[in-house]
Length: 386
Image 1 (cartoon, one colour):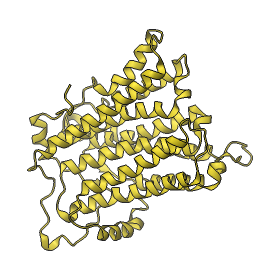
Image 2 (image 1 turned 135 degrees about the vertical axis):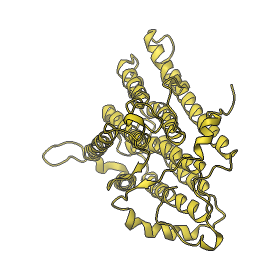
Image 3 (image 1 turned 90 degrees about the vertical axis):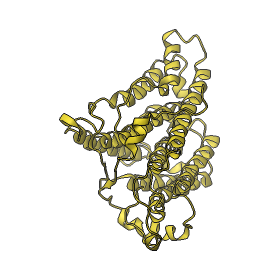
Image 4 (image 1 turned 30 degrees about the vertical axis):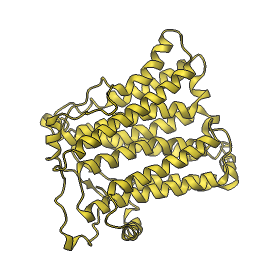
């Protein structure tokens, strides 16, 4: 088995030269945050690569999630206040880096398909990590069903954004978008820092439900509204022939990929004779989350190269092993197979993403925008996306 795959064909690489994609619309808080992003941009030297900035943002989320997992492996324990504060800071830094990387790319004239894929790829991983972190911070291990819906709703929401882009050819930014959701997450971590998250165990007036139910319901409501908006656009028809996607494929076909991941996750959790999901909440979500991140990255590449998506994929290998084990009356330890599935999903995600990056990097003639003349590089653009 090759250590790094080469997923793109020569035809797909050729299409990267022709692709053009920029965000349409501005979210509610983006104009307010732009001053901070521009100030931060001035502090970053021009020799720093935009992708390095993106990677720093991702590493912030990786570090904070690991800290939470060490202190709260079952999402029921109490983490020290400083861990929750670190998570709030990490999400803020991730948000800032995610905004500044695009500005840096435009300032230095280094916009490329590599930067676009790397940006969205890191976002797909961060979606999984942040959803797990929020679940731990709210101590949702006491209610596994709530944790399941919170995490997988976030994954589907992120996937639907790129599904819509695959259909319409453009990334549409609504008034309530990633920036606003990230601030909600920061607020959740900030409240969790008080008394080690005891705030979320307080009872709501009248309803007598734990306070942590409120952010979960708000997140699910936001996902529901967002998905309705995205699906409405998707089913209105695409930019391809006869209302198809940018690749000329059915606008419905991408649902099979994310649907397979979520369906397998739900069936295995429900049918597990050993209570696999309830005993390994965080590991379970990470294993299936990395599979979801892989197919999201494939969707991004499909849109960038105007190509179709095949349902048969190595992303389903880990979840498939768990499913087959249940089908044959769990002849192997489910706990052991979960670790195998986690490693396989993480490795497949890394292998595919790194392969894409190396392939695009080897074709340096592929650029989205022409380099900015040196005399005008001091001008800071208003768009924050690569």
